[in-house]
Image (cartoon, rainbow, N blue to C red; front, top):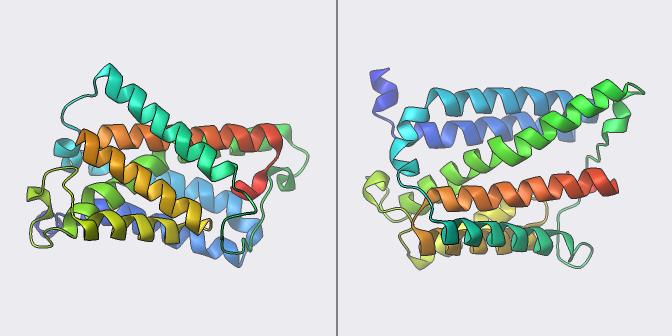
Length: 221
């Protein structure tokens, strides 16, 4: 335990890396995609809960009502910019196209998987990604020796643009991802509060999930 505590970056990096490691096999084994998503949602959520005390300072202070509205507006803006330019902005080829109907004719299985997918996208992923990208990496690029000493939302051009670009490269829609990274980064710099950007990210992902399910646009997932 002492060794873990001497690595303050571990609670921020490990859930993110685990999520990526459990995502990659889906490219080669499409039939495993739904099961991999269930496993990674559970394991990553468990890790975040296990290290919840390590994030206490990240979640200190609440949001005012205007700040909450700004966060929701930011999340909706990212959602629109993610969906509307489909087919126009550069994106990596999506090698695995999964639809829950491939699970068979069981409505229970389909509804269950969609529910877990929405839960993972709207709750686990925003917390995991914001802890890594904008709480850890954005501050680490400013002070690698003691990133926790850097105030939340501190700005340098390297940390702001670097994280936005890397955030875009993480997603298959690179251009839209970079724009999203810039907007989320601006929100954090403005509010100095990780809760705002997490809520914005939650709004984006939940909205995208509702759009995907209601329109059958499974390629966004």
